[in-house]
Image 1: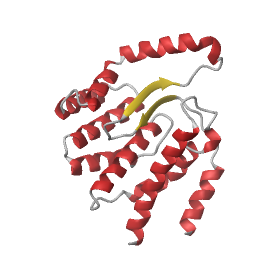
Image 2: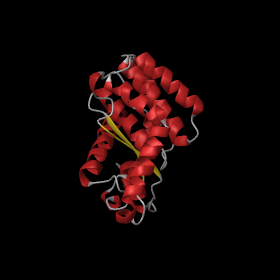
Image 3: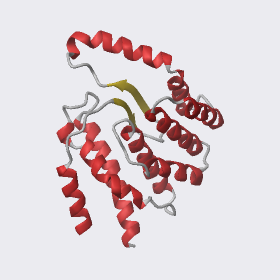
Length: 209
C-alpha cells in the first residue's frame, strides 16, 4: 500500500510534458485495431489546417511502411510478410519512434501467427524501456496487447519492471492533458487509463498471490 501511495505522489508531482510526433492506436491486437500517424497540430490550427493535412498526407505517402503495416493488421498479408516488412523497417528506421514501432510490428506479427509465447516476450521487451514522448503511444499499445494475451493465457505474467514507469503513463494520460494534445479526448484518455489499471491489477495480483 505504501508503494502505491508513493507512485501516486510521483504522478501528481510530475512536470508537464509536451508532445512531439504522435502515433496513436485503438484496440491494439484485435481485428478492430487502428492507428493514426500524425504530428501535433500547428498553433494557429484554423488557418493552417489545410497545410497541416496536406503535409501529413505527404508524410504518410513517403513512408510506405505505414500502408504496409495497415495491410498487415487488416489480414491482407500473411504474418510472415508482416514480420519481414517489420524487420526491414527496423533496419532502415531513422528515428526512435520508428525503431520502437518496428519492434511492435514484429511482436504483432508473432501474435498474429499465434506464436503467443514469443509475442509475449517481444511485447514485454517493448514496455521494459523508459517511455518518452516519441514512444509512449506505441508502448501503451504493447501493454494493451499483453492484457489480451493474459486474458487468454493466465500462465503469463506481466513484467514487474512496468511498475517503474507507471507514473509517466498515468500522468501522460491524465485528464489535465485533455486540451494539450490534439488527438486527446476524454474517451481516449479513459480508455488508456483502463488499459493501465488492468495491467496494474494483474501485476499486483501476481505479486501478492
